[in-house]
Amino acid sequence: MASGIFAILDDIGALLDDVATASKVATGKTAGILGDDLAVNAEKATGFVSSRELPVLWAITKGSFINKLIIVPIALLLNAFFPAVINYVLMLGGAYLAYEGVEKIVEYFFHKNHHHEDAPKEEVSESAKIKSAIATDFILSIEIVIIALGSVLGADLITQILAVCVVSILATVGVYGIVALIVRMDDAGFSLMKKSPNKGSLYRIGNILVHSLPVVIKILGVVGTIALLLVAGGIFVHSMEFLHHLLPQLPGMIKDFGVGLVVGSIVLIIVTIVNKIKKAFA
Image (cartoon, rainbow, N blue to C red; front, side):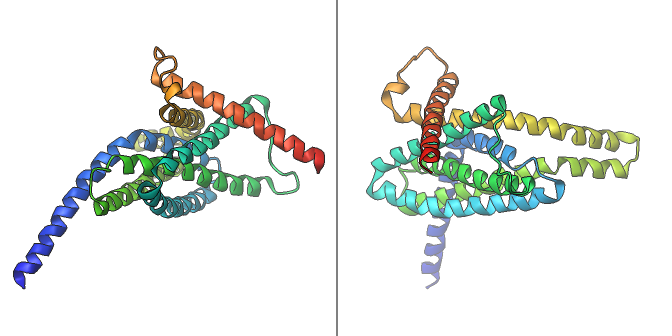
């Protein structure tokens, strides 16, 4: 009996070692997309009044967990029975990300306003940002899960499942944990300034944190838009052979950005035409 228990414990220990190793490899493979995920979602989780920042972030985080609960089992099933479908799902998601990135650029340069005039501006902005952030997280989560799964295909099924689950949890907790720290920079700064009024190193650090937040938010807005186009372009470049070999002299990042910009522009034109047709027949 005792030897049987020890054998089971030994098997569990070996499994945990395999999962830890596989998770480490998968996390390394998804590090780039996690950085993009952080930039995109940090930009989406900022711009609210201080009292609403954490509730909004928590709503997005819950949506991210739900996204992972949906994506992980579907990705595992598709990989087992219809692996070719995963590539098309990725490209659809890439098209959405590219569209969102180009739309941000167009809105910035042409000052387009999509808010409803008959609703309170802050309410529309908050609900729209939450929905947009969760939708974007869904697409990015698909890529994170699929890249993580692809890096552990050589392992047994149990190890694959556990490793992908670990990476998914770490991705959500890590990304939104850092985002929470970013959006509370000013509050932390004010707290430090109160503890050392008008003098001392704590006051200077607090003052830097308070004045840095608007700059960080602007930078994240730019980086987040670029990240959307890079991720989208990267999906198409790696999924379509002719794009992968097109203009080999170009650095990969520039090619990814260019492809994302082109795809997003095409999707934006199609969406604009469809919307105009709908209005014409409304």
